[in-house]
Structures are given as structure tokens and as C-alpha cells.
Amino acid sequence: MLRSFFFDPDSGLLLFFGRIVDFLWLSIMMVLGCIPIITAGASISAGLYCCRKMYLHEESHLTRMFWDSYKANMKKGIPLLFIMLDIFLILGGLIMIIFLDEKILGRPLNVPIIVIGIILFLFFVCLLALMHVFPLNAYFENTVASTLKNSFLVAITNLPVTLGLLTVNALPFLFCYNYPVLWFFEIFFGVGFCAFCSAQLYRKILVKLGVEEITADESVSTEAADKNAGKEADS
Image (tube, rainbow, N blue to C red):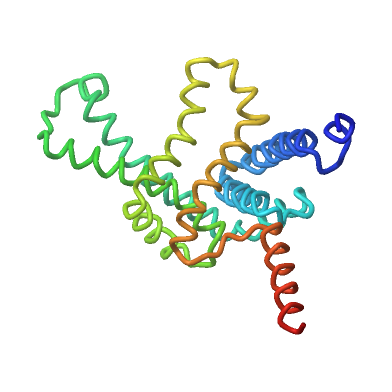
């Protein structure tokens, strides 16, 4: 029994370590895919696509699957990234000018509190929408405009999942900011693990949108049950 636990290809221990290696390699590929910066959107989308295939047990060759998805998402990933970056640069710039007005401009602006509230609210809503831009790009075929519109709609109508996605993706960077030594762990493992957690959280939204989330194992079990039911019916 102990031998099968350690050396059986289907044992929990080997499957666990195999998944760790998958996260490690996926993290490296996602970071490499982000190096040109403008391709970060395609890299994130490809990573999320691979993670969905991983939890559905449909991954065949992780490296090939990632780079094929990377190329396929390039056309929409680049404009999506640029649009979201422009939005955050504009809103972030306004927030910096408002709160650092004396340092930047040399005089106070005295911006009305309601205007500050609106800008902060818009920044937060765009941050929530960002949690859905690349998952929707990874899982659905749509135009750039439709993907952006749907990201805002899905973010607001699925607020608990959206906040979960924000937590999963923001916490590692907060830890790394406070403890820079963790950047090594984040780059070589955390990126893939966060993508996998995000893909798992997104299952609820995909089911809500009418996408069947049946794993390969469940599919085989269902087919076997149907065959047995058919045999019993024939007998």
C-alpha cells in the first residue's frame, strides 16, 4: 500500500507534485509571455485558458496548449491591455494630482469632495472590471468592445466572485511589496497558482452563463453509466 502511494502514477502524492510542476512551468511561460509588456493580455488569457483545461483534466501538452492560446489571444489581448492601461493611467493620474496637488502643482486644487468620490468610485469599478476582461477573453469569442462591456456587467452582477478574484490577485503583490524576497516565489510559482485559483473561482460565473463545467473524469463516468443503463434496458 505504501509502495503504491509513492510510486503509483495515479497516486495522490505524485499527482500533487505533478500539479506543482505544472504551476511552476505555467508561471514561467506566463512571465516570459509578458516580457514585451504589450503581450501581457495575451499571456494572462492563455494562462487562464490552460488553467481551465487543467481543472477539467483536459490538458494534453501544457507548453503547446499555452503558446497556441497565446498566439490566438494576441489579436484581442493587445488592444484590451492598452485600453485598460489608458483607463487606469487617466484615473490614476487624476487621483495623484488631487491628493498630491501641492507637491505636483505647487498649490492646492480644492477639488469638491463629490468629484473626488466619483473618480475613486470609477477607479474601483474599473478595477473590478479588470478581473473579468482577460477571463472573458480567454473563455469566449467576442469583439474587444463586447468583451469590455461584458466585463463591467459581469463584475457588477457577480460581486462576491469579483471580490474573490480581486483578493486572489492582489494579495500576492501586497505580500511581495512588503517582503521583496517573495518576488522570486511569485514569479516562479505564484503567477500560475493565482491563475489556477482565478479559473476555479470563475467556474461559478461560467455555469451562470450557461457553460457546462464537466471534467473529463465526470464525462467518462457519465458515459459508462449511460452504457450500463443501455445494457440494462436491452436486457
